[in-house]
Length: 99
Image (cartoon, rainbow, N blue to C red; front, side, top):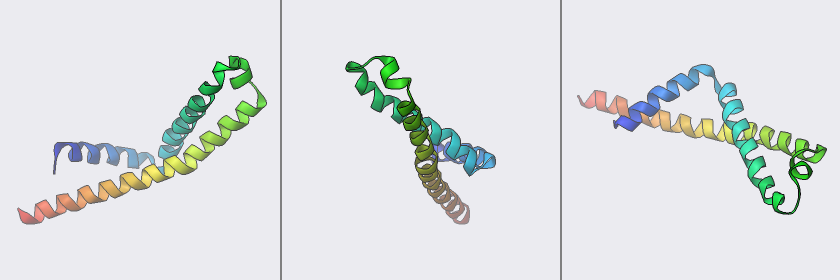
């Protein structure tokens, strides 16, 4: 097992203790908000900051993207990290058997 695998395993075990919901909320909300900012920065070339970011449409869009980030990105990222974690555990078990 490589050093990066060992670091990932330790970090992921700490994250798993907090739970899937916490992970999806923190990572997914951040991702959704970042996507909201990037998409709307494009419109600043033609409109003012208030026209782009301070209105009902922007609030609805931000909430939608944050919610989608939590459900989509957070959930998929958790699943991907779990697969990586299980591969590392399997590799660790194989190394123990070989010793």
